[in-house]
Length: 164
Image (cartoon, rainbow, N blue to C red; front, side, top):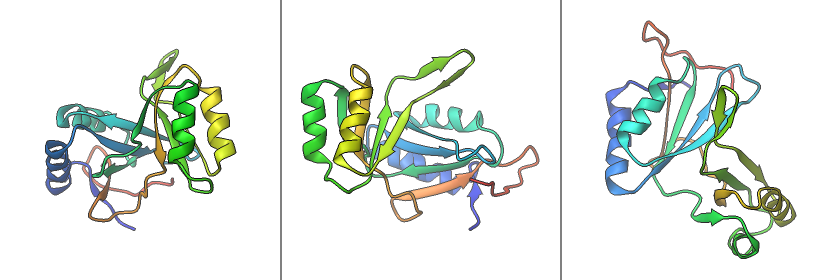
């Protein structure tokens, strides 16, 4: 599969259009040759989104979702856990993303976890009790009218698909 550059005007215009119609969009950021390392981040503005993309290393794949994702939001407590268990059916893949960045020394990221059962969902939420998160079905991340992907080009502007 070949990707366009994250500097491609059509790709950027699509993201800007999507952000005009909603409060935020979710990005899936997949790092090349990094043992499957990826991040999920929400962006409330086009300027913050493009600033983040500019800081990513070459070959990083960026996937954006037009439709709102992970609709269950809040601080994890008993009530929040019960709401999540009612909303996410057993056997469907779920995603939990912290909405406050964690910092470990010079590294920072938004912690995330995923699973496929109600037991896993309950366990993951219990482990994150007290944290502020977004929860919902795992987003379908293959390109469509509602999902677009691009790759960060190298210093010469060349787009080379990485190993994800």
